[in-house]
Length: 140
Image (cartoon, rainbow, N blue to C red; front, side, top):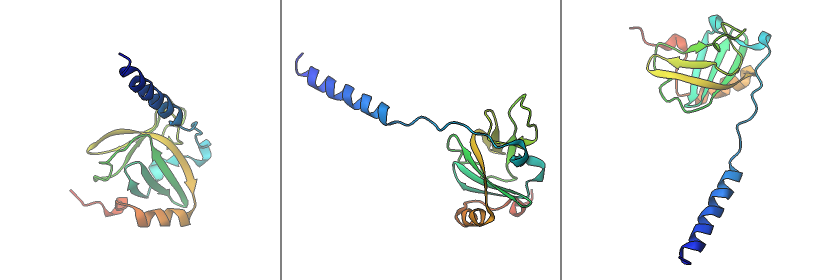
């Protein structure tokens, strides 16, 4: 019994240390309504990686971060954004709780945050993107 005691203590200490090292998710700060993505004005988008998309609506550029990996968002015909159910920002994506994005072969993925970025950052991320923009989607 005594041989298990030190092992148990080490395992317990490791678990406690790992739990303390884990950081909570950052607080959610949705964009003001005037700065939100207007879904009917999206004219360019790219999938940067499994948790990151960039979107352009005319002169405005956005970085969309997802809560979890969504590896199939790069399937045509495009991205489908959904506002939070019962939210006041219908047709807008602001980074609020309940907002999602999906594509034809991907279940809805929760949006963690939306931030406005400048054109230079958008173009830089476009170079790293794994996906084409909406206009390049093949016709069916």
